[in-house]
Structures are given as structure tokens and as C-alpha cells.
Image 1 (cartoon, one colour):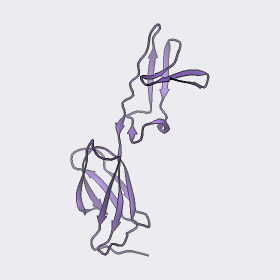
Image 2 (tube, one colour; image 1 turned 90 degrees about the vertical axis):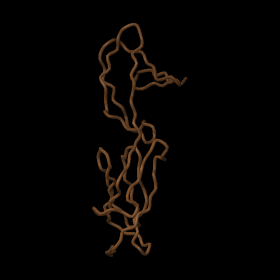
Image 3 (cartoon, rainbow, N blue to C red; image 1 turned 30 degrees about the horizontal axis):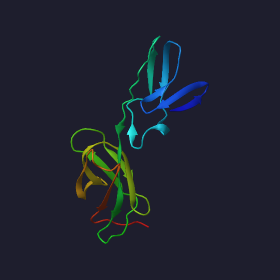
Image 4 (cartoon, rainbow, N blue to C red; image 1 turned 60 degrees about the horizontal axis):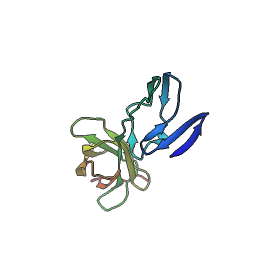
Length: 154
């Protein structure tokens, strides 16, 4: 058990949870993203919590895992291409995510959920047409993509 003092409130941190004493009433619980587990995302940033007298008030915080797709975009000769829009478009449902390659052709598409994604480069299918993210996937999934018929502008 670890005891902390946050703004005059004593917190007891254990393997089963975080405990503190509070007077009965309704409180706003704000969650700081800096304390989330790696890859963790929440559906909301705060909760209204009603504390009752004489017992424990449990609060369940439902984290969902977020992944990143990272890699490089190269032309047919293996040269990196900068300024390419890399999109991960879900085959089923969900939001598409995108990134722009840097000068070394590197990209990071963040906030991707589990599922199958069609990879697009500047709106066109990439050489690795789809990528699947499963519960067994690493939090950063690496993929290298080739863009055919590309012009590198210096």
C-alpha cells in the first residue's frame, strides 16, 4: 500500500484500487491522460460520482486499447517519400485515421482500434492492401509501404 497526499486528500493506493475518505455528496472526477496505461483510452474525460454515507463507492474506469500503425513509405527504388498522406480506413465500421510522412518517409497513424484496415497512400491502395489489428497485436504495429509511380519533390 502506498499513501499519497493530493491537495490535502489522502489516497491509499493498493493492488485492488485507490481509496480515500470523503464526505457524502456528489463529486466530479477528472481523469488525467498522463496517468493512463500505455495505449489506454477512455470514452470520457470526467465522471460524476455520488458518494454515499457509511460504505465504499466503487468507480469502474473502462479503458479501451488504442494502437498505432508505424512505418515508412518508399518508392519502387526504395527511396523514402515525404509528404504522403497515409490513411488507415476500417473495413467494417469506425473512424479512419491518417498521418503525413516526414522527410525520411516515416509515419505514425495513432488512435487505431482492433479490426481490419485498408491502407491508402494519397487516396490509393498501398502494396500491403490491408492490415489486421487483433488483441495479440503489439501496441505499435509496424508496416512498410511502397508507392508506385511516385515523384519525389525536393
